[in-house]
Image 1 (cartoon, rainbow, N blue to C red):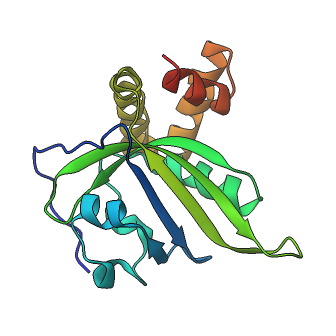
Image 2: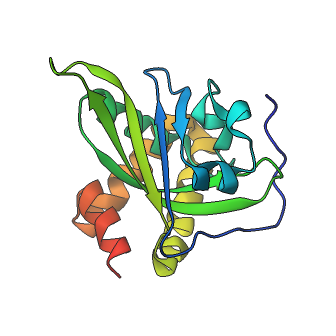
Image 3: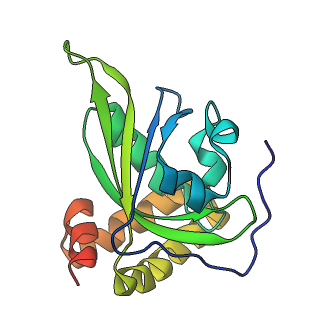
Length: 170
């Protein structure tokens, strides 16, 4: 499936909306609720079995997903702000929580994500942070972006989790 070309159109979730999806260990979509398919613009048949990153907007820094994958592969949950792209090229922001799905023996069997409408002030701030990270990636790759993120959090005196949660509580 080809990635859509971004357009200057933004969609938004309603306050009561929750997007739910599940993926396998490789990030291929195994389930998506009705709001997930509606927001994405894809049909369920188009989404199932497709890598979840089909929704990744080019404005998203790669370091955010590297960090996300590292956390969930170590059986830790993560919260993040993510800008997604729809089939038509429109975008939408979400506040996401991703957790590993474990079997009774504690083995990771897949991943579960619940997304909701983000705080608009948080999105305004995170856009600037993500621009810094993207600029660093363009100059020096993902390691440069990682350093910018580490230095940014150190300057704030916050862990990644503390920073992300504080944005949503604004």
